[in-house]
Image (cartoon, rainbow, N blue to C red; front, side, top):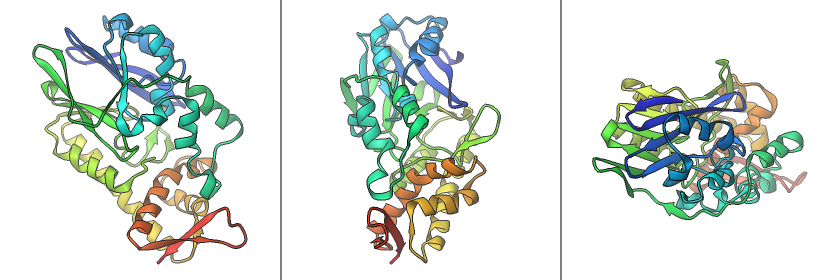
Length: 322
């Protein structure tokens, strides 16, 4: 557990060899936990570190899920068992995917099965299901702009930060000139504790993602906290935003060059992966499906590319520049 400011704590965990940093805001009258981690994270580190910070799950007011990923919503059910009075909330557009493992798998992790035959299987799929927790109803949703009073002189604002998901939200803390941003922007890579590159960025909606980068650049903040990256201060915030934008631009450029001939999403991931990062090859290149599918959808929507059904395998879409 790390204290950032008076009443602001970073709860420190791990997912897949990567840091998992969750924010706990403890005001005089109201408290907020941002995200619940994976299935067992409430008991593994969230509640023990809340207690180290002088908090009590029985007094928690809000559990706010920044977005629909298993390492952010998988602990929803367990956390509610310890804090039944806390209101479980998320961004409005992410509500369905945050309700439980079946919905999360269908809407996020299996999203590329039907058109692209890209999906998780075997032990990886079982790990996703196991870590996604149990069904737990979402009790409230936010769209951005809502304000929560933590103390008489401390009001925070829920802000919309879409791109990684449609309903991604974070908290702008004007009292401390800080943004608690979840996975809103990713730089160019996810690093592990060992300093090695683990995963590429996994945004889904290119225009929304770029708009969120611009929004963060113009916020009056001196501290930026993401869930999987070192805390950014002052000019490092702008550098992280620039790095995030540069990855998008590089991906767009490489994709346009590659699509002079038709290619499937799988082929595109495997071809561009080695040019975009140095994470472990093979299955990890396929994690680019999230971002690359977003770029492909953008090109098709703008009439710059078209989807093609190949006769040899009509189940799988291919894409080429129009």
